[in-house]
Image (cartoon, rainbow, N blue to C red; front, side, top):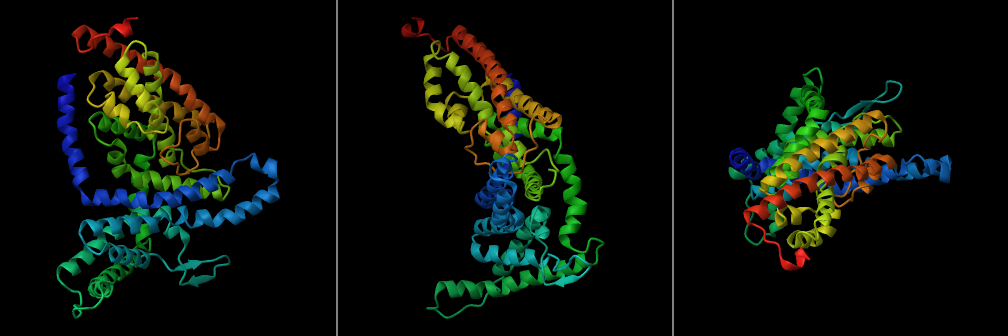
Length: 435
């Protein structure tokens, strides 16, 4: 086991260090973090108003009026997620380059919007000009947002680096100086965006977003939104955590764009009263894979049964109890610890395999609903996350029932560790524990 852990550490640590040092990965993470409060608020409202039994309680006409009143909350949060993404990524990347982050974000947003089609065909075949279809600022355009955010900041940075700004006399307010410094670099960035727009007009897709969606996003999404991929994401998440690295950050740096786009598609379908297209999404991740209760709750249950046998474990359990119920499992990771604990490696790897498999099977069988796409707060406890994330009571019930076999598994491996530590002398039983 020790040789295996050393080998894995040699493989994972360089990967983790490169990811943590990569400015693009960090900017990508920050970009999605920016969107979280707004998409969370809009999606929770949409999911709540779509609960089936509310119409029976308040009447269909009342609920239709309420849903119509609340519709803009989703339209101007989840349905424009690409705007949040481009602004968030550009702002973070410009800040890491020590540029004026506000101007970096603004010029990237302009560049992104320039690539959007501005002619749509309305009902009856009538063409409308100077209009942007909401689909080109939503989930479909997430990859375009990522590309344009990075490209525009890089072009803007090139202009600043080569001193294309206009220098004003001393005494001019700094905000005015910053605007003139950004003038020519921003103009250069806009020209690049215009060239990109014209080039993609020549493609069969007619614009950058449709081109990227057809050739990149859709093929890659097919590789990510499936059962084996979810298993891989769960195992990688816990594997990184085992070595003391933030698993969600590492895995989401690769998978988040695909998972978030799928969640947004589901939420838009829910708001429109259509069937949900994706079983797997960022909501599925949260309900069945990533939220900390999958480790903290069963481990806390197992530790409770050991509270009279191991005073040290009982102390950790008390400290970790409240945070663990709300998905904060760092006290267990580093206080128990789970990190680099060879006895805990197997249950950490098995936990996501079990939770993902059960969640997937219950979804396709119809016991649990397809995750709606709602963005759940990270502190959403077990059961509540299942109910809110699927609009079905059974998802929460299945989550609770799963805690029983998972707790039994963790207890089994705790007993192995306890026996080994007692035999080796690493743990010596105190007198009050013997009683």
